[in-house]
Amino acid sequence: AAATEIHRHRLRPAGSGRRRAVAKRVTAMSEADDLQAALSPVTEAFRMLGIRFFVGGSVASSFHGAIRSTMDVDLVCTITAASANQFVKHLGDDFYASLPAIKDAIDRKTCFNLIHYPTSYKIDVFVSRGREFDLAAMNRAMPQSLMSADLPPIPVATVEDSILSKLEWFRLTDETSERQWHDVERLIEVHGEALDTQHLWRMAKAIGVADLLSRLLPKG
Image (spheres, rainbow, N blue to C red):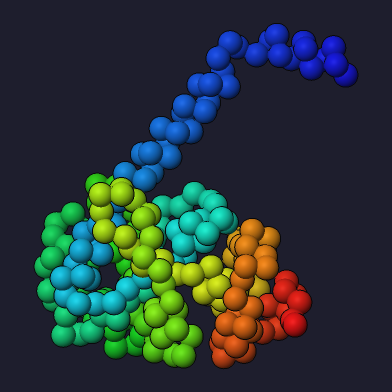
């Protein structure tokens, strides 16, 4: 076995490991730049219009340790019909943004999509439903430096609220989304005893996913 490993090592092109590491860093930097370019105008518009928001979904769970590549960004916000027109105007020509779709999502407390043309990033904007869990997640979101340190921190869902949101999505997909389930498993593995289990259990009961949480986290 040792001879085989040496043989493989000799066949490996010199510097290939270093080149792969550099390529990964370049890719990560490019993705971060694209995320910044797509997300900054949206968060700036929210701030100018006094709309509360936070980052959720895969970007938030990746930030907390369940890392995977994505070209989608999920935002939760408190946008109202009164600010919809100004919001679209502020985004400008770099974005696909349908005003009728936005107003419909506001009325029904659902989701609308934005697409940043230069980077192809899709931003899914969820209008807060105003439930106990939604209000708590908004209040608990913590400012984090997701992008450049020179930019204002962006509110990001806590790890507990990321877990709860993913469990709710798992339930909504008839418990078929392995990706959501694996993200939850990873977040619990990474954070373990540091999790606020009291909040997790209280909100899991409120949104009807306590049975799912019990499969992963002992109650006590």
